[in-house]
Length: 403
Image (cartoon, rainbow, N blue to C red; front, side, top):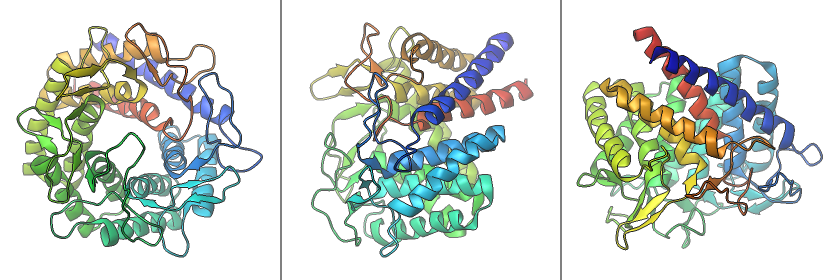
């Protein structure tokens, strides 16, 4: 096993560098600033595609994290470009917060304040502060935290409302995307508030922030996780009435390690034990219900119709690599390490683009890539797969030190 883990770590390192190089070489918009809003499956740039706050924030996080990992200036240069673009084009100087979308010139297109986007802003700004010590970046991160808590937090029922308008007023349509249901609360937004709050706490040990992380974990344990099936419920009314019957296997496995990480970072031992116990149950549910024989994670399942979406998307595979390592770190059961390596082998065999680089959006059951989806775009980003590589390398180093 030791040799297999060493090879695993070497492959993660090699692919991390490859993904970073792809984004440096292909996505920087040298003419209009920032990064291209869309590159299609065939690696064709769509130069006038709109640019999203989430993609830009994820690029900011990715290259800040890459610099923190490798200490190479070329990664910091890209992170700085993303920081300046976020500050100059997405940040709303008058009302605070990040707007959702700008055109290819950087002019506002959609000024709504999606809380999901504020979360990724915190994620990127806090990582950039960790890389640079730039006080302005920390100030931006804490200002977004303040805006979320002031305008999105539900005082009556707990948790956070999905979206508001430019001036932080009510919106009738709060959906994150056209595919999502229009309800005031979602698992996805809460997961991606927990994740940046955890990262912010690494550089800003604020008592209120710790309390909010603790409360978010309780929201997951008390409302979002179905303790009969050990899957996340996805959409909710204000009072946490469940309004969905879809299982998202990628979010389930991603959530297991993000919840564990959050409980660890605030040092709440009792809460950590509770999270670890349920994380293992969720991992087992994914392992037995959402995993194909080739090692991959299926996309989702409709519980009411029993329809299984058998496509294998890039991001659930990336999250599964870390989710299964996390399960090993909790339990010591080597089957989870093997499962992580199985997913990685699937990624190697099916998702790497051997011609252009980066990963395909998804493949079907026959391993055929979906040519209609982006290589880079509003949702196709370098954050899931680079994070899987960085987290994987660091966790395998810890495992090696303990053995």
